[in-house]
Amino acid sequence: MAYTFKHGDRILDGYTIQRAVGRGGFGEVYYAISDGGREVALKYLRDNPQVELRGVSHCINLKSPHLVSIFDVVTNFYNSDMSAADAAKQLASEVAAAK
Image 1 (tube, one colour):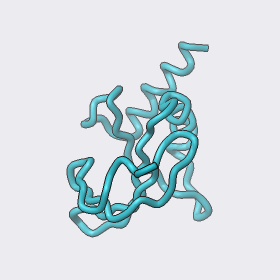
Image 2 (cartoon, helix red, strand yellow):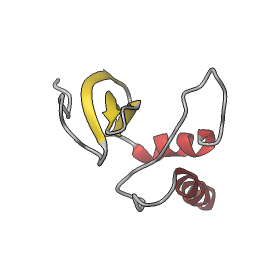
Image 3 (tube, rainbow, N blue to C red):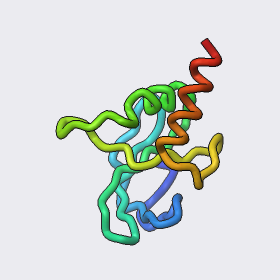
Image 4 (cartoon, rainbow, N blue to C red):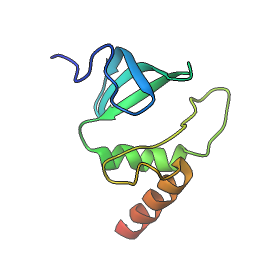
């Protein structure tokens, strides 16, 4: 099965896909470079995005040299101008309300 995006695609403003890295149960991961030269991994959520976003909401503020850093969360469900922290707070409150 082909990946959704290819080299050169700009799926988010400021980021250019370099290559696909892998595919898992929730979506696809891509190696990308920002317009400023920062190397990042972008995760495209295909299936069950709310489950994956719930996990992100629990991890967004964790800092460790043994963990990847989450810089931002951009989804169709949230305002893309919202900061990662605000998106995580909104997501956490929605998850709590759903329990």
